[in-house]
Image (cartoon, rainbow, N blue to C red; front, side, top):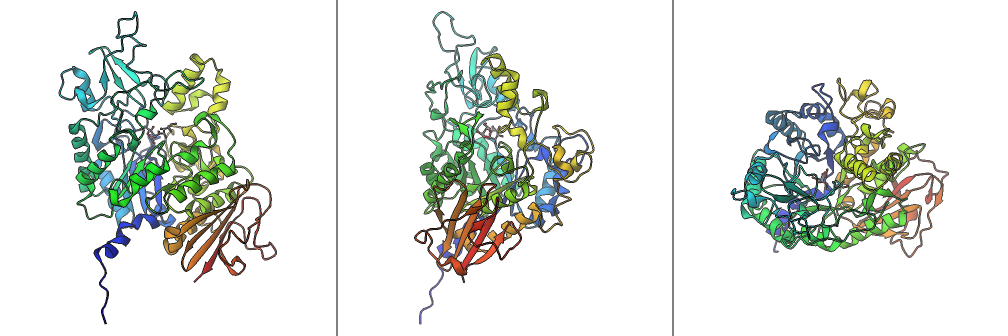
Length: 586
Ligand code: TEU
């Protein structure tokens, strides 16, 4: 008798796939927990909550930037990649956090922000110092465009018509050397020139430095923006906009795959792992995502894409919100499921630090807040992909009602308000109403730990207001309550760990034309899950057509739900915002 030896492939496969059964928790440090009393969250605050995270059951913590930074964009503008900003603590605190996570079986993923640096980074300070500085070419410097009559070198003569993501032009004129530099985000976030091999080498060296210190990977900020069309052509100007859209010339640019493959070779290939690489990629298509995440191509483990969080806006403009159609959401998420079914991997999320709060946006943050928060958790986490929990989502935290523009802190909001009221002719009231539902500060109010002053977030004065609903929505009220949103997240996370069909099963969308019920099947040869979610405040009968459903659901077991079991309710009847998960098979 011959015994089949396991091939190298089959031995390695489970380790390589570890992230398919993992759940990521995102911490936005400024708003998580403040230990020092200065009103801004910090690393020691996070260290004090490690048991809370372990109890939730998450596998990976993704830390938004804690590096030295002028904080123009809350740390996404980095002036020293190898140090911790004193606002957040020290390198020693970070080591203690890393060790504390590892001791509890969790991994630490850092934010890698290398499309741009801060304008206060020494690289840029040197680059702007003179046209012949050796680092001049590390950024995108261009002479003024000759505009008839103006002689160049003045506002309006920018090298092209691109607008910045944060309003205004994407070019800033530098008096000292008489040229413009490119900044896709704020003027304090100049774009690095990845065409220059020295830039790439410097970035890889920094990444290796962090991995050598024990971090477990990177979430790569707008990583599909790093390769640009070097001709930097003008972009189309949409109706009602002041500037051109440059994104066709910097999203998924000509050398993007080459750069990511090089990064993989220089940083990840020879490390034993397991490490995690996540490419944050606004505007990435399904077909591109397959290429980015096909393991054979060695680029990144998964993408983090934005299609489903643009469906409740006119023309993808977050300041023009519209009602979400459930059929659009199912169509989009379903397309990503199908597109990555054979090769590649996706992140699953409802919210992060750039998005509105999940329960306010996709659920109901009034009467059905707890039910809908749980239903959303179940629907998301039972898709194929790696789920992300954004801090406070596990408590069912809601959007914030801000009053005046002075209550906001986000540069994106403040710049937009200024531009819309001064150049676009909108009133203050119009702008405030339009930005309320989807602005980023909704997700940046402090985590609500308890019902005490400032929600237990700080003993000082918080940098942004605490949501007044902290008096009843908070962690202290939930961690020991088996019926809380937090406890429900624990269950859903545990299910991914215990059920291979959750991490590895195929996905089939059901009822694509139903505007109220979200329904799908996950399947492995020996197990199937039927997942049903009611996205409405009305009762719904689920009209499953026998042809859609591959197994006999009559005998399947209800393994998860957000209502108490009630035998008199028919199996395929859903109460408001109800979630039901049935399991058939071994
Ligand atoms: O965001 C990338 C991005 O393109 C958007 O999500 C964008 O910032 C914004 O929400 C547009 O409305 C990443 C970071 O997550 C974000 O916090 C940073 O501001 C941005 O990059 C620049 O580093």
